Length: 320
View 1 (cartoon, one colour):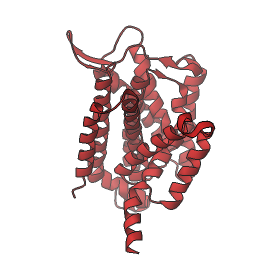
View 2: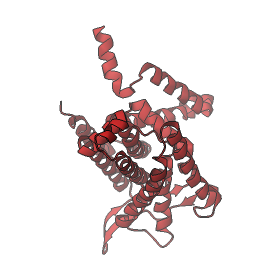
View 3: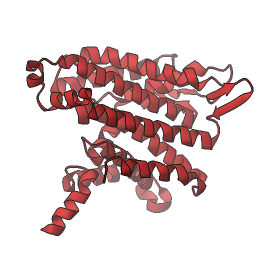
View 4: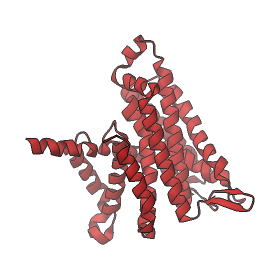
């Protein structure tokens, strides 16, 4: 089976889902799809280039805040400039962070990215720029309008659903093309042996910085969509907890696979939703962090290659 068949079928099924979804489940699918975009953006760094970042949430939060702050109180803004503004702001901060943090390696790189993310977090948390710890609200959802004709209104659930789906499909397709390109092969070589790539004449720093900026822009896309969906943003979007959560998503799904990133986002979000449900778990729902953590530990121990490796593990066990 060609590698694009399963993603295409999945996209078609998602496009048909609103016909049978309740308002709650449709909102849940939108949330999962947004986090899948976020997970895919980090997959470009961790899976393709071998750059483990613990500050990726900064770009998500910046994209979300720009989407809300640029809209203001003057009415609905056009998504044609608001989306590029959110992605551009996230990409600019990614270029700044990457230019400095990529001069370090290993655990030092992890800690520097975390430091920059926390710096951005405290800018929004401790100042009036973004409403302080309470955050700010998005009073008018973005639109695409020509004259009096409204082509897209993200205040409508159907429009938001298909916009998020288009963003997920577009992000997946872009990263699939990158992985198959000369640029993607260079990143794979850097992940395996950067010193050998430099010896072969590759400017590895430039490749890594380009990947960092692209990943930041895609995280800004996820932030824009999350702000539009929730109608509000707060500094917790930039916290290290959010960076850790998206890192767990790609570990849970399987590092090095675009499908794994999407599967990990689905599994992580559904598990979190399940363990927070008082209707299903009763008093245990108050301790959802504990049960979620134990579940992820069990998955990682039993499936070191992530959920994407489940089929191979089962077939291997069957042959044994």
